[in-house]
Image 1 (cartoon, one colour):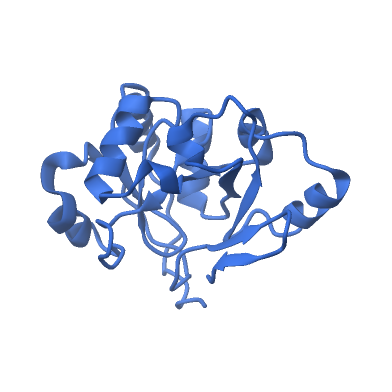
Image 2 (tube, rainbow, N blue to C red):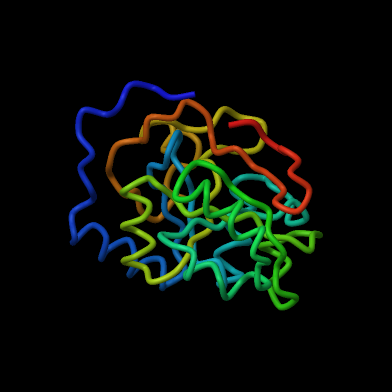
Length: 196
């Protein structure tokens, strides 16, 4: 489901991307607009940052998290090699608002995959998110900006009301046209785990 397209598809300014990536590399948690709602993100390999993010959201580590990327090559180090049929299925939906559960490499930290042998990943079509991942040089944790059980934030004000000064930076820009967060599908079974 989509909302009317934003009047401007303005990307964050280069200095804003530099600020966000500098902070991400230092272990920060940032808020940023995504396809439908504000997201919270951090360096996926920084355990302290990820665990702080999970605590802010009151989300159990067992649930796992989503990684977003500008392209598939940013996700490959986290995933087992995909079969030809899986690649065809996944690539047909990317870039776009489909998050796929794909087989994770055994060394992927538990704070990312939870108690699963798969990892939730998405190649985003949101221009601002893709620019952020490119500037950062890899994928980012992406989870909706809300404490567990609350409605995801759609404005900077809602992000501030939920988290106050606990968020280290907010990247400006418009939300995408979607009204709901991404659909989540298990690529191996075809099962839809969350409708978009």
